[in-house]
Image (cartoon, helix red, strand yellow):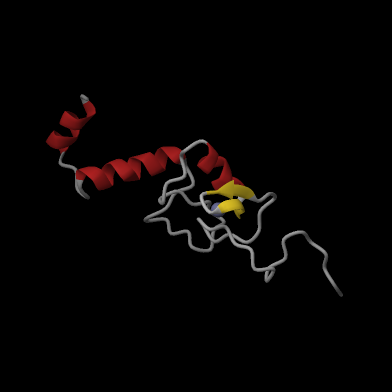
Length: 97
Ligand SMILES: [Zn+2]
């Protein structure tokens, strides 16, 4: 039996950001049109496609380094910039900015 779905696995197309093969719609990315999945494409368009962002359905998703929530992505990036461990005193200094 032959399946005629739009995005069959094995068709070769993958999201260049998260490697997802199945998406309701392909979107434009830095590498050209239809190179990003729907979720990544939406974020790319609004300038929020960070390396830490990854849809939970992505085969490369790792909970320790990725998140599908923009707020968590920002949190992770802030932690990276300020060092892995934030001391209580230091953290209060940063939050006053
Ligand atoms: Zn994607």
